[in-house]
Image 1 (tube, one colour):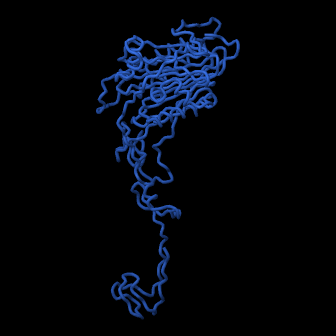
Image 2 (spheres, one colour):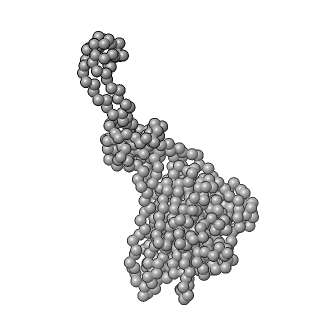
Image 3 (spheres, one colour):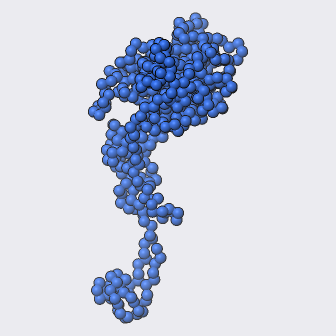
Length: 462
């Protein structure tokens, strides 16, 4: 603010500058407080108020820009709310399933895993490309060094709260000071290789992301490229479903990166990878888990579903257990798209057994109950595998029900995915995840997109 000049001694005064006691002309001292009226006034300090950050003492700072308002400054220090919303289930109306064998340009070659094919002249080992890095997201728990005041470092291994930036985060993911739930690294993940991309999001209703994915590529013995996409969906009614999906996706990916370079047929390799994933999930049931006093499902074994696709040497191989799906969408949208998997669900069993038609089965409240999964309490494991030989370019979409609940039929999915999906797989995966979130985001949603190039003439068959 402006500084008011003090009048010279001997001039008329209105009052004491210190206590505002009325003065008379010629007074040299205030009769009430003794203020020396002849002393030179001190320069007033600059009026640069500084907001206290995290309760620290106020410090001198540069003035705020003229456009900043007090309300805007106050909101910068407000705590971030992380609400937990009750989970909801969604169901979709039944849609016709197009058999891949009925579609032009998509030849189904097998539904049974072939015997392992090890050529005598094929090398036992083949140089592997470096495994795909685990998707990383910025650490949301590191305070901004430009605004955070010096404080004592959190305990060893602890993380600072992103809301109050004061308390440390306990093992359950809550701040010990303000109680706010912390965002998890798996809330949103994206990863792209040259030949495949995947996106996973927590959705709008769940408090955590229980999906997981793995994407990778490796060289076959003939030096051609094999591309892998694996998507797993944790069963929410089980214990630690997020750990189950992560363990399954990693185990299956590692198994494929070992068997494919050795010359194992992709369908056999995928069959073995699903078994390896099941073993990894089963191991979680006997591993010691952290205390979960408030988990009503802590007696259930960890469980998840799995779906995968491998593109190699002009061949498309899919494998699954559960209700996650694989779709084929040709670049030429005048050709029909197709769903390449059949759900392990109550509704699918009723239709397959001829006990109900699709409309009746999917109208039942038990329609989306899964009948196959990976976990120690699962029924006898029956991995499903199938191989196809598309004769035209297209994309393969590997996804959880968090997506297909909003685009169930192959035609609906093809209408959502961009026309240039083969050239921009990451963008296409982002668009599909966005479609699910715009539709309500009732579930975690994970999508992988694999471009399938046109096989050159003379390419080996399955």
